[in-house]
Image (cartoon, rainbow, N blue to C red; front, side, top):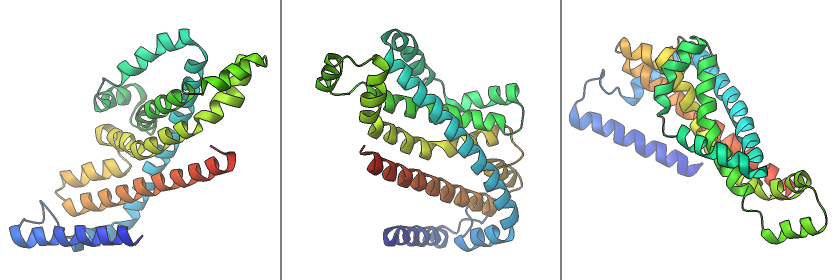
Length: 243
């Protein structure tokens, strides 16, 4: 906590010092005080936008994590499925996620659905990739012993491979927790009337740079809090189940 406070204090000092040295106008770079004032004066609007974005992040994270983990198990259980889906999974990452936002908005409308879909797409790959890597790294000696004892493929998966791969799944979930808000905000930038991303776009169009920075500050706090919460829950679950 002390390190975080010192980092924030240093950033604010550099920020204010840059303003003093350059004389940059407020519409380009507002002062920290102006951003805090905008945050307070628009607290109701920002809180409502943060709640909307937070809902998108939670829904997209839950759906994307579930789909990613399920696909990883399916691919680890069948080499044929892996041969078919792994190239498609890799190819999907060559498409810039920002380019998909207008298409999803066209298909799903301007509500919450396309933003959740964007979050799902961002969350899906790190979870699937990290969990699959963990599932494929099960110690061969343990697999040989299970085979000698006559364990079925799915019993090996459930009682041996999945428990051994939980640290890999946790790594993917930690990364996804950091990336998840990006998907929601990108969707709001492209086609949204609510949320922190939409608030930033609208404020930028009215040259309210202080409000843009205030929304960005809240988004950063939201992202850090969500990532820390996910990491804490995963740490406790791994300690409980011996991952």
